[in-house]
Image (cartoon, rainbow, N blue to C red):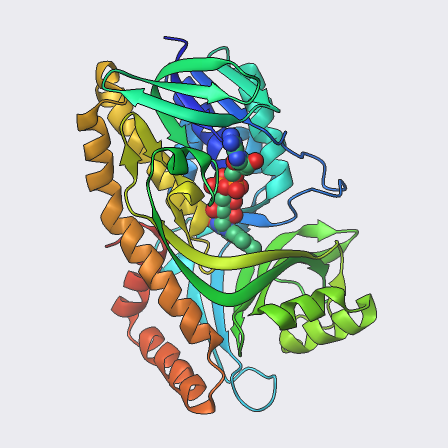
Length: 397
Ligand SMILES: Cc1cc2nc3c(=O)[nH]c(=O)nc-3n(C[C@H](O)[C@H](O)[C@H](O)COP(=O)(O)OP(=O)(O)OC[C@H]3O[C@@H](n4cnc5c(N)ncnc54)[C@H](O)[C@@H]3O)c2cc1C
């Protein structure tokens, strides 16, 4: 056997998987045809940020990652939901979900994706049991009961006990295993960029609903002496594309209006990147000697910071099963247990976020009024409010 685990994909999920499994004593090879871009100023840098929710911290800690991420992490103390669905772009209902209602800890911590890739790949270079091969991809998969044989783009072939497919929404390993997907298209795109603003964010993450999808500001550390936030602005595809093409002053005026001027005039601090929005679910989360994780298994619109946090739950589950019975790594019983443990949560979250996104997209005034009233009702009763917060964090059912 060439290694215990082959991780196909070196995105954030794949790099984290490689660090976690190698940290637990498994021999890991991780491949990705695209080397990680670890410089914020590079043309291809991923300028999105990831909000890691509370439960992610223990997993990152156990994988030896948290200490190196903590100095850059921005704590998120309050989740503010704003409905601005009236005729004017102004807040009608504004409700704060405070982490302090649950515990002393923040909801989570926000980190730039390019920085995560830098820190994760540095961690891999310290681990003796990881062979990270950027520039090489997986091209074929052949499995039998006792092993998987994976063909790589450099012409070599590798034998392992488990393939972890973290190779994204179009996952070549998922396709090679013949596992289908159910995809929902919303006709929507997300603009991702960073801004500075005169009014401080006070560690409050703010999600503003009007039409076309949410406009979300997530706290970042100060930039050039000014308060700063990462923005995800979801809109109908053609409108998002038009916004992307606007001259900077016109774009700044448009986003300041869309933010209801809650932070004063917004100044664009990075280039704008455009992301297609879909929801997707693999028909199964495993195949013979194969486990699907992260976007290879599930894709959700960026609402409530669920995407990568679901992925970490996939990894935590696989790691628990692997360490509980290392001799059975990748066998049918282990992969059935993975499927059983993860499929209900994945199905519920993909359905839940799909529904929330549709509610956020509505443009009919009556539906917008209903949305504002719904927010009030959900917020009004404290047990409902705290149950929802726990559900969002993944600590409640
Ligand atoms: C706008 C936006 C904002 C988001 N914000 C958040 C957030 O705040 N919190 C959160 O939890 N989630 C968030 N998400 C979701 C999160 O970004 C994704 O869940 C995460 O980036 C997906 O990671 P991944 O590693 O599965 O996929 P990718 O990042 O797509 O990585 C897949 C990797 O596989 C590689 N690959 C492709 N083909 C092969 C091959 N043949 N062999 C090997 N490797 C291959 C690719 O090169 C790539 O590096 C957001 C998503 C969007 C669109």
